[in-house]
Image (cartoon, rainbow, N blue to C red):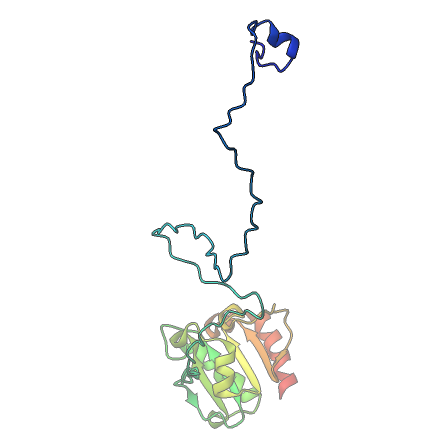
Length: 217
């Protein structure tokens, strides 16, 4: 719908056809408008900023963080007293002989104290061939100390020479391969041979052993 309000004089004559007369009423006095007085500034009026209501929540309030030189301080952990590891007690061995010349003889026989009669006789010939008496060497039956490595034997006997009959490299945890030659390990000269009982009937092995014994006399 178009706007029907208009101020056009010609248009208004179409609606107001009667004559209109203006008559001055002497009884009505129209007071002139007084000048509006300026409004003085309001002094010492404090305006409080509107504060929005804060809704309480069950969430814990996060404290204000000061971004300057903020470093988290952790509590100092209690000092743990230093514990000194106790060294394992040195293994001891029961052996025959006196070990005065630091010669260790190993046998490996779980049925006899040393070996069979044939094996013992062969051993007597061996020690005599290298000019050793009973007080000079230490004779140990390794079968009574299974799992003992060379390091443990070395700490106890401190051998300069070791003759092994029936005790293998793996038994002593030595990473060597026997190639019919004298092996020097940690200042110990070592000779490996079969069990005394088997060696007595093995002529070829006895010849090789005899050659090594001549080198250590």
